[in-house]
Length: 455
Image 1 (cartoon, rainbow, N blue to C red):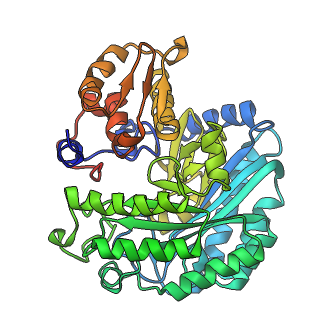
Image 2: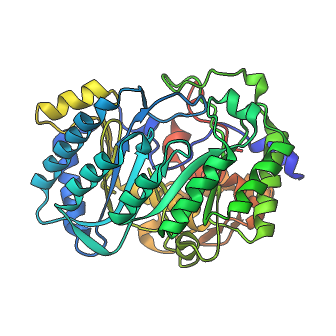
């Protein structure tokens, strides 16, 4: 079957699998604070000394709304909100410190948003020092943050580098003026070049650019120009995402253009294949779904060594068992459970002021969930999985293999007696392959569209 025919057949709504179960399939009953505390304490005691923990801090403020963005954010120009928000985050962190059995060993710290560089350098310094003063650093720690090319300054980069940050990701999306205007994200190549050069000169060892295909009014020429400019700057990593059009999700602001303005189906995939071809020709290597890296980057090395991991921060080189999410809407992961914070700024701050963990919902994973989660992680990170070991077998495995037969017939998976392999030519369909394992999705197919299209 031709690639175009496969896209028409398999381009259906599906999760991106930053977790399993995916958020819409978390148990309706949620999770009690005590269940969450018990599971993260168990995970902490099992892994702190060896693996260490990860911390994700959500910094939600943005000065303007990008209409492609589905993240939880708070649009404001009031920078006086910075310090009260940081104080609240540090109070939340203190709650966790009081629940740990020993001093945490910090392996990974990531600042996401929103726009982390909305915050003044001195305030970010205050926030990070408030965390670092209470932890022991893992021998292989890695700190990273997301920077907006328009407001990331040399001072931001130097301040965070002095605190131990060596990775930075800049959101580029597309260099076309028409596309930028449609998504309300106006930024010049010069701004991106400046921040990339500054980061490199300061000493950052991994610089990433985020690109998106499938944006409104995007053409093949736009992709060629954007990827060419990106290659000229030679970032260590490139994320080349499919635009997730989910305007039905409340508050995402994805109504700044019409559906007819979006590239679709075969043409949308052509945009990706064009960009991918250019990246591969220049020496980038496909490293996980929608990600490319130079052979010198730690992401590629983790992929080669089968150490690549995936969680709510995306792909990561650090497979920590416990990730604590701090801040409004942040999600924590103990491996055994998930917990999401209050999504509104006022509710988040009110919970903290009452001395309560600000959890609004969560999920306690069953034994079956844990097995399926591992299979999906294997497929997402290594493009293969195995059920040779008894601890990765489950009752519905035969049904999963039956569901995979159609994909096998179309050349999208190779199945042996105890193993599944995703061929290189089929990596565009990795979300569809994971969906065959997703027992919760199979048992309760949504009546309305919950997810973006898979291809």
